[in-house]
Image (tube, rainbow, N blue to C red; front, side, top):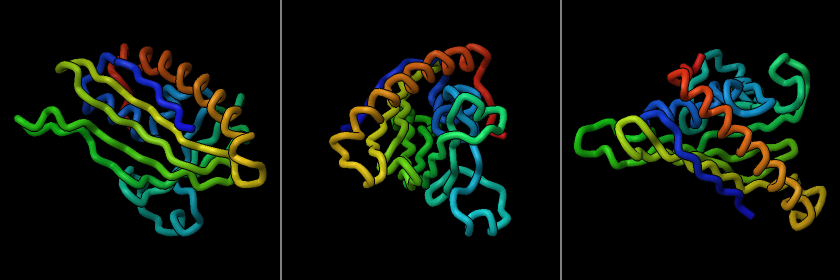
Length: 173
């Protein structure tokens, strides 16, 4: 079952995409979440600065103390698609799209963001997640729980996103 929620934000499409699609900014607006570059041992060995794009992996850790460095729920992902909204004159209608594959250890599936311009200063963001708990338990049992948690997390994220957008967004570190 796919969770899909849409929200309009007071940011131009390129700024909205940079804020919602780049996982380095998630700690500023996704509830109880922190970002860690690289999800796989060979990513850390590469020694290159982390940047979003197809093939890049990362980890988000969620939980009550996650933003303070306390261990929490680990969600490893790989970026499978990364297309920022067009900023080329005449091509302004092309939405931004970022898609992610969940790598475990608990959640598997896909997630993503689609950002389209509504005006020069506002955008519509679609956040979707099609996830399930690893195959330890049947998906039909775990999907409803995961979906409920995702709905709460995304709705909380929208409120935080509006606060961040009202301050002009945030730059990835």
